[in-house]
Image (cartoon, rainbow, N blue to C red):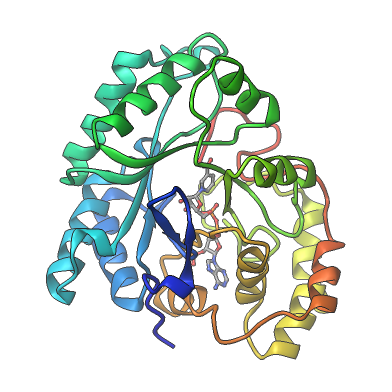
Length: 312
Ligand SMILES: NC(=O)c1ccc[n+]([C@@H]2O[C@H](COP(=O)([O-])OP(=O)(O)OC[C@H]3O[C@@H](n4cnc5c(N)ncnc54)[C@H](OP(=O)(O)O)[C@@H]3O)[C@@H](O)[C@H]2O)c1
């Protein structure tokens, strides 16, 4: 079913004036030269929210795809919600952490690559540098004032990182993009975000699938035990997929939406892209949500548990 995401029913409030579509198309590990066609295809299939990042090195292709689809479908810029992320730089990896000035330059560079006047959401990709985090956040606050981004947020921040912004008297983030799925539910962080009116955006929703990041070179922190569990024929995800007549991926994504998290499924395959945006024709009942809620295993795996040299 072709679902169009910009209807109010398929969005939720992000700021006093901006709404975020509940399903976004993730673009991590999509090469720049494939991004234009895949992003255009995603928009044709009904996605109205695209998630990219400076780190993904595909902003040129993502921008081309957005403009191609807008032209083909007669859409306006405000019909598409675009997120990109500041790569903050990590001294521990031999990089120079960004300052307020280089943060401002980074979004301007991203906008030039995307060929857009503004993004809808700009995030600090990770809380790498204790000395520069606040300076980077000041850059985001300034960029929002300049109209270069409608909303500002963080990603992979924990409670203490957000408290640090508060303690400095700075505006709080509109969103925190974090790894969230039934195997990594982060109840304390999610409760804190809710109390503070910060939207939790879920990434890597599909970790429990046997097919998650299995392509060569696609880094995964999944353990062999986890992968064996993903392949079990009677997993709760497979049972519920059968019961509701949908795929396991749709169960995982629908769980996220019912928890109130916008989700960002990535696929390079049209059939999967179609499934992943078709999330509004069924509802998981309370008992089955409780079954999924009982699957928490703690920390996430998307960044590679023991490998800090890659990020997403
Ligand atoms: N802020 C951060 O630090 C951070 C970290 C990770 C991700 N993200 C964002 O969140 C997005 C999603 O996360 P992700 O890319 O880690 O993973 P994901 O969307 O949870 O899963 C993608 C993986 O699942 C496979 N897949 C997709 N749909 C499927 C389906 N219907 N059935 C079976 N397999 C399916 C994909 O393979 P194929 O492509 O071959 O279909 C790929 O291997 C990213 O693209 C990125 O935009 C952000």
